[in-house]
Length: 337
Image (cartoon, rainbow, N blue to C red):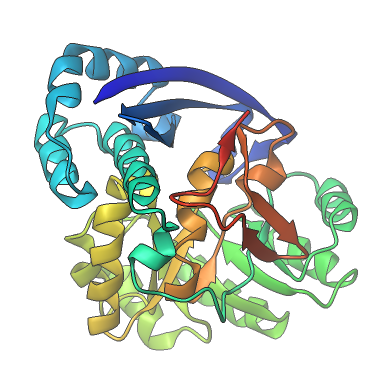
């Protein structure tokens, strides 16, 4: 195989803020390509500051083992993921980018879109939400009004959480999902969740700190709303830990190290009677297309990266008031721009 890559730094339409005051105006990412004969597969991994993985680090790791990445005798993505997993044990983001590229390559070699390779049908697919980042109440209302949508994901973790949702609810009947980004204490969550339920919220994502398992056990037993793990569920081994503490998990391809482990995480969650959500880390269309192929298998999705960014890295996904459609082409079904 022949490896190539490029950096990107795509701007957000609005500055993006989550709990703890983290704000960014651009999303840096690494785009990788694997070429084998006439076929080329591409993948994406965004760089996330609070996971201490930068684009520069991904490139340094990639260059340090470039010859090993390229010399693998590629036959299928799962074997390649195991190889990459051991090659880059401390960089799941990089493994994810290469794993997505490997699946795209494999789909093109087999002349099938990914969801067909997984024996699923493109039917009964859930709609994606649109995220409203933390801002002043007036600006959050304005962002929502500027993007009519059937489902909104609202970032919370402030002293005005209830006031924010009350203000937004005055302007829409759309479904609301709350992402607290681990911003609440157990007492705050117990106080806020009943009020949010009364305001028509569907579920809460990561209400408490990722390691507050005792608090989550209390919430799980008392919550009026379903609770989804995000920061508490990063890798495959975390799925079982979340059982009895959360009603569902939110899988992030970048964090879990790609498509290959995500397929196993879905099976594990289903065996534990847990719901499955798949989320994004503000990927452009390359990474978002990988998420999209999972839609027949999951209950909820947050894949609004291309909607939040004012520039993109590919074409091949269409959004129609939350409904996602693909190009029908093999692999990811996308074209780089």
